Image 1 (cartoon, one colour):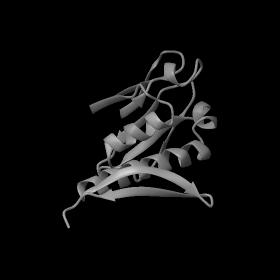
Image 2 (image 1 turned 90 degrees about the vertical axis):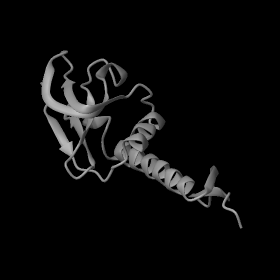
Image 3 (image 1 turned 180 degrees about the vertical axis):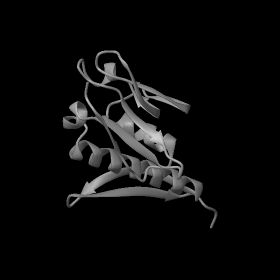
Length: 136
């Protein structure tokens, strides 16, 4: 049985977290108001609970569930097994953080009257393009 590890994050917007997971290739993400148990690779119910879950069948045949639990401060900590940490390691977490940050930026900008037009890479830097829809 693979041990689960909990990693603190700054993610505090569930919808943006789910959208970022979708962008990382996990399009079937469960969302629960009350945290539910994760499932291990043997199909065993684990004591660890999460509010946002990617079930093991979407990760790999010998994988465990990947979860994010909502903490008292409103942030979501990642719960990943030792076995799956090779797939969900630093590089994957960095990609998730970039996707999450972009989703939060787009959501915040929309609330302030900016319309997201897209992004492009210029000199190895991402530029996000906006249209200001606020009345002049």
